[in-house]
Image 1 (tube, rainbow, N blue to C red):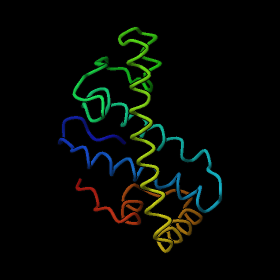
Image 2 (image 1 turned 90 degrees about the vertical axis):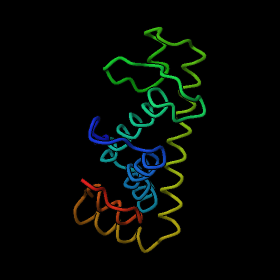
Image 3 (image 1 turned 135 degrees about the horizontal axis):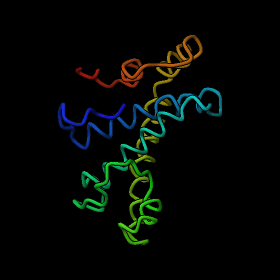
Length: 150
């Protein structure tokens, strides 16, 4: 899931690492099977939600320190926000661009890590076949990230 709201704060680089981990399974499937399954939907949805918060709530994009949305309901894309007219169409397009940039960077980093560490990819593939799913810490370990302190 997303970071617990009040337990502790996260730096931009920690959140970016988290996004890479979320893309781990998706990228692994793509590299191993040449296509992805519906199993990655939850990860992609969570990654999108996290990137949205980075852009719209925490000022962690090239748009700078500006809060675009403070409603409680999760909104995924800028276009959706434009319907509520809390932001202009132009701002909505910029938000979409910033979110996509963050997600593309995470996906590319996951690809780099897994394609340059074929051994890790093979372990990931074997584990995916055996268990069909990996938990966060298993993916962290395979991608060479430190384990979450819980």
